[in-house]
Length: 246
Image (cartoon, rainbow, N blue to C red; front, top):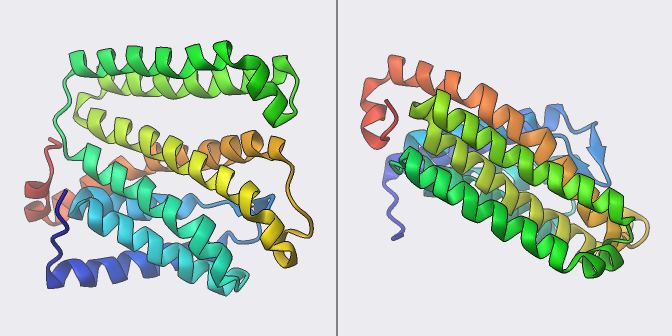
């Protein structure tokens, strides 16, 4: 997708970044292994739907950097582990939310995604268990529940709330990619940021970090986002022209 930003888009990115940073700072006291609790993720998600993926992605990336500089002041860690996942999450949400995805396409995608995620998990089970350091039962229960739960949410929304089908798919897919990138990156770079982490994080931390990030963020995007977007459409009907949501 070609990058096309108007002057108004740059202004909106600034507003999104400021709001994301401000509300992100408010919950800075809650974190798991250095990864914060961020209900504020609903803010760039809303902007991504209203103004497009580039606005959502850049607003989130800049916002999380500002938030991190205020909270812990480690620019290097934020640029490596915080900025890229945030950009990817909300770019994906904005991109997919603006597509018209039919129920048939959704169900086909869910089937492919389920097979694509679960089959490798069982085929390479011993490798995953060795890498994470978790027991077979713990790994399977956490991974399978996360995958099945995510796909179930998309399926339910797609059938009962079809006007939010694309948004729900974008939210879950974006959060999966973002949480995966963040958790792997945090563990990988932890030896280089000992002033923040204290000691290198064990590889098994990847799974708990992924679950923490996904489970504490996607509910806010899915549950709080739609009412805010609807309110924005009612207040500013012209915004609806940028989206296929009805």
